[in-house]
Image 1 (cartoon, rainbow, N blue to C red):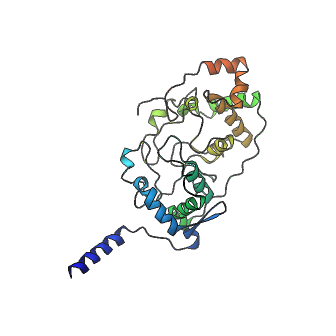
Image 2: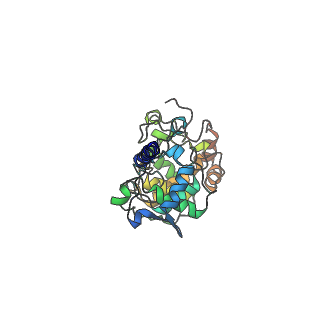
Image 3: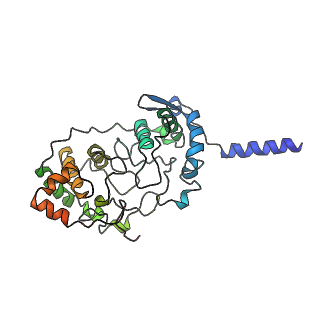
Length: 287
């Protein structure tokens, strides 16, 4: 009798803690490139590697959360920073797959390249079971990224003008150090302080390292953060000019843009005046 009661109690606890598994084929699978993910396999991987930060129910309330500078992603809310899709829409499976592969620079989210591609596809499939959004909404259509135009001084100069005109400096600072007048007031969707990117100290961005990645950040925005989408504000060619200028702010990363900019008197003086300090996520501002 006692054994039966204990068994019943264990089963009750297990049922109470169980994460509901959504039923449709779309929710059971993911497609990261050529790999189709399976939620059953992904569930095992999640509870081996991920739940300590992201929580048993995927709500970002894992036992490690209080010790992390940037709170873990809340998969229940299904708000994702790095996407190829328009702001406010769900990412594609490939976006999530790439995020797992790449990791998130300047955070505690590592690159999970130690797992096989199939493992990562399985994790994507399981992560999608945490939010009902994956049942009611479809991922957005990836934005079109036009070919990058040839680098020129005119492009860099125009990008510099856009940086001022679009008021990027209010958050990122006049020299891109993440110390603009609004920097200390910014919070993310978790109401946690968040610091703007410090270009002189960084070489890789949260959502990648290439000019192509930086272009997508402008045009899709980083949902859950104060960084908006500029898709309705600037033309594609303007976005590329802004990309070229922002590369010149990364004075510790010898890019073609920086080399070209420093070949001019204006550019050399501008770069020389840069004060490198702090971390890629801010310049030591108090929050």
